[in-house]
Image (tube, rainbow, N blue to C red):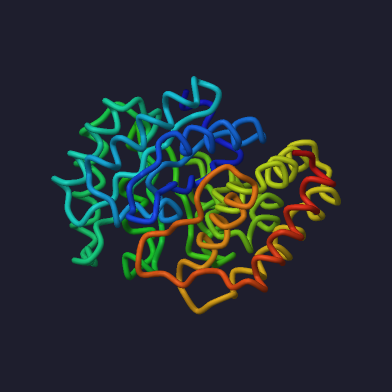
Length: 302
């Protein structure tokens, strides 16, 4: 399955009820929806999935539900991030048991591993603990730093280190990763404002949370890029940028994922409930979301 890990890897949302119990039936329905919408992979237990607010057991159950519902149609990537190596490896074992095709991890957070020696040790220990392909998740706002050349030069030849999800949001960082490591590692764009830039400069895939409610937009952008139709690709990516203006509906760091859940609730796929604390979508913004849903269905189909 690792040879299929490219293209649109949707970081899947986690459906819950008002008391934050996971709704696995809705998760299976969402898995069907995005799979039929043309995504190439599903990333479970990422930032979009609110993973840090769920127990290790719950995270394993999420991977299991998605893997069963996916039925081999798309690759299933399991997020295993934690504060330390032992917990990450425990999560990897759970993900393997649940049917994951690949592993995604940040560097340990809360206790920042700012030492390059620690980062190297962590990467070597994690990759050695599994035969599955591993992607490193570069997300500086959470870990406190960006993955750098001193680390990557040391670990890039590890057999099952498959790639990097770059959520730095910096074009120059993506280019550096692609130019220096692109022959050895797959480089994925994790910041949606860089979708077109990344594709035009050889990204191996995108990890866009907007592919939860609107998967066909992102699938169309990927398809156009593979066909060299850059005018069409830019059109789809520009639409993503327009839709994402709703990300500023509040000053919450999680606002993009809050309104994406609202969109899927309006579509009848899953609940809009979110783990607390969070700021709900206003009535005015719900109307804007409804307008985008109408546009999507008219121009991309149900």
